[in-house]
Length: 164
Image 1 (tube, rainbow, N blue to C red):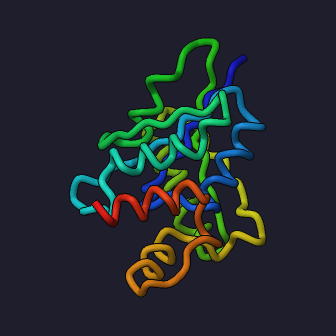
Image 2 (cartoon, rainbow, N blue to C red):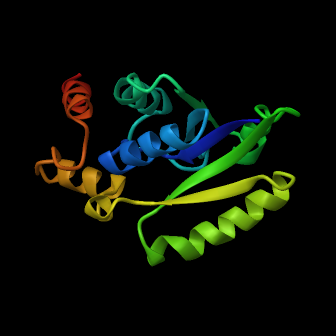
């Protein structure tokens, strides 16, 4: 049976932590869909199209990874991949216990709404546990370096976007 892993997040912007989890998911499952989840009630730092573009740039070497965006519920989006011969799982990264309580609540809700769709937790690499999009945005706002938090292509693309 084929397994499609849907990895949702805001990815605003995508970090080395995200990329590490995406690569690990690509090794574990047949297909990985990185899903830029758009919250219509919340204004993102980057637009959805910009986030998709940044992600596509850093996952192009992973042939079984694609990038999509949706403003629908994650489980509703993921349902489109479910077929009799295809299992769908949701993938969530967990940096530590501070993330786990929230993620467990979300997993239970998604399981109920997604007709039993399972959530698989991938722990963040220890060296990347402090990496977050919030930290990236904060550093950029203060003119600080972000090269230790972002893929080099993302750094270049963000500079280009800021100059435009």
